[in-house]
Image 1 (tube, rainbow, N blue to C red):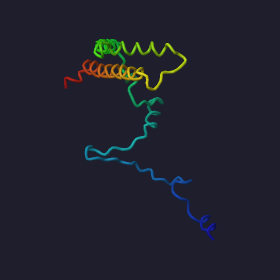
Image 2: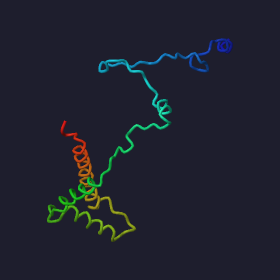
Image 3: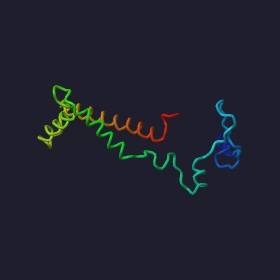
Image 4: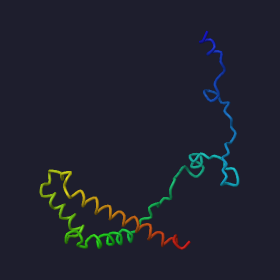
Length: 145
């Protein structure tokens, strides 16, 4: 009985039939004045020659000035002897030498090397990030608006 009712049942819309609705979906919002139709970005890519990118080609917009000034901007303050008469850079490089003295063996988890490594690189990356934001923001007149 159940098998005959399944065999006689009409096809489910969307599974093996072409009776899907071709009506465009319209999205609307209180922020938008006109309804916007949903678009398939892959279909749009085929219309534009087959290339689809989400970001600009040069999204990072690297500049050697930022890298150079950022490195100098971090090396200068991290080289001030502020930690028991030693600088952060000096302590980091000294810990590298200490750990290389027993090279095949990795640094212990309690080694001061990890503290200096994380602190020094965190400062460097923060300096480079803020340098990129400041330099590119200034060259593109972002802060003047």
